[in-house]
Image 1 (cartoon, rainbow, N blue to C red):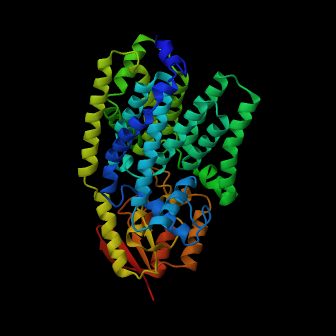
Image 2 (image 1 turned 180 degrees about the vertical axis):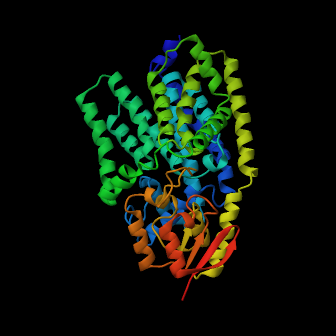
Image 3 (image 1 turned 90 degrees about the horizontal axis):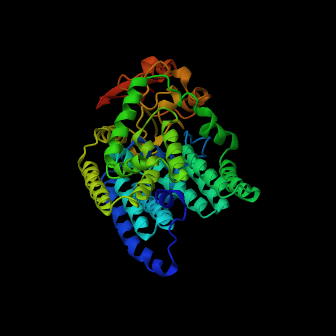
Length: 484
């Protein structure tokens, strides 16, 4: 029985008659759940610095900036382009447009998972997979789960890759894998279960070529639309120091354990059925286990363990739980749904009620920037809160929107590998040229004693000493104005 339920990719084939009207009944439920679970995302102007980084990147691109040249980040181009397009249509004063897109992304992921489950185990399993996924999808710190950032837009691409592979549409599967990679590099982890399915169905030259071409074309187009060498550097070769495990090991590991525990609470309704089935037998749909295993490795890659990394684990866990529930007594399904609903309610309340002190700090600094500068002035915020530029509606004086790119202070790392010499290759010459060509009217030192403070960064310290004078402080951030 277990092999029939978990082992075959199409154990239950729904007939056209039994499937008539299926999505007409299921879609409204999934739409409602997607809207409810993402409701907290609309209650705050920003959830985390990544949203601020993307927002100001989009403004710079709209003003004529070029990605990987005058607008830089370690991420692929899809989400910055998505923000730019949303701002072009709806304006850049609010993130409501991209929040709506995030709702659609989560809904699309749920629909694809429901379709996968329905094809394998029947209509009831499809409903179960979609509902369980959405209930668990916000099961992290709200700043990780509710933000409209890379992982949220990556998930429908990974689910689409599995959906296409399940139907032997190898060209489309390759395209979906490429879209996942162009959203975030770790989205490429879904290639492992896709290749497994290609081999399982009978490895053919045609299928392999279609998969390879489907993957290569979007990546090649993205490289050509930006700067090919810059694209390669910023998305692949230029992040060695960032991905290093050295520095603040205990702090990073503690963060990983905390986020694992939080996600385990969110998946309290999903994990017990899977564990129960594992006690019966250790067999199952290998591609689902490979999807989960490759996603775990993707979360670990880089040794940062941010909470939003863990979103990648939820789709395969939801499908595995759905598979397990097919062979367990019916009351287990009710228990799983009830437990997941209760946990979802807990995280909803957290998202709606939890304070955001970092946002309040960025808003106070942004207000000071607005008062002390004119709309056309360039400013430099030396810190880890790029959202300050967006909140103040001021143009950054540098392409480097955080001090992390110039000091390797990243992911809470504050150990020995933080400093000017650990910056992204070529960053400091470019930064000095920017400060000379377009000197900022105001510099905000928002380091507050952290390892990237100006007294530990000689080039910045010399710049401030030569051309700027202290003009006050706001909420711990020191303001410097340019001397006549």
